[in-house]
Length: 132
Image (cartoon, rainbow, N blue to C red; front, side):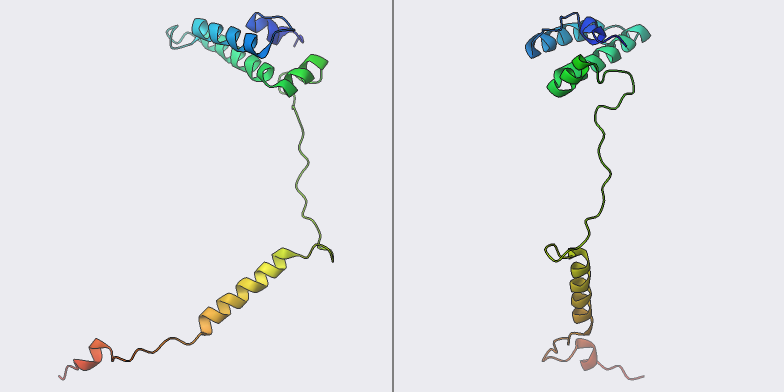
């Protein structure tokens, strides 16, 4: 993909401001919106291209990397995130996961074996004994 094709799709120059980009995008959306064009396939394809170009150019970080030629190819990742790795416990940073598990176990044991309050009244079913 040519570096300036996103600019060409919106009909603007590389030095366009954010307001100019938004203005051009809105004008072209009104022109190529599938609902206004009877759902034609070419209007839908053009609208998808406009959305892709606008999404790239409205974000200043993505726009600058596109202008430098680092991104903008179809399917190219914009940024790569490092995978999450658990942080090992250290004396300065205790392992809170193990502490939390121990606390939850202690609470569940307490609630299981805690004495239940005894009411002063006898249960209603005991006063009405039915003899056969």
